[in-house]
Amino acid sequence: MELTVTYNLEQHIVIATPIGVINKKNVLKTFVEALKLSKKESCFNLLFDIRLCPLGQSMTDGLRLMSNLTSIPGMTFRHRTAVVFNPENYPIDRATFIENVINNRANPAYRVFTTIDAATKWLVGAPTLPPTSA
Image (cartoon, rainbow, N blue to C red):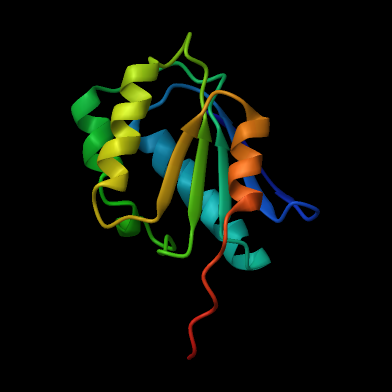
């Protein structure tokens, strides 16, 4: 899997763009790399652009991984995650089902989109939690 992770300073968003099959190994690698940059930049807005990724895992595997996002090292309730997908590669009913499951459990904010613009507007326009005191 190819992976590009960048930080957009102007919009204060970490953008991860994987190219490869969607499976547990690749999803975890993408999250881990995005969260490293998130920590470095003190940025809690994550955008995953998976439009070039074909689906390669079962619904059950996807749900197991995504239903507890805070189990991924570095993921916190302050994070907001937007996933941009291509309905030709990833069925929209599956994407919205996973979004609903994630949001109906104790997880950070998570939304799916079919365009970068909509995802960015949601991330940038959203209120953020204040830092916790140490």
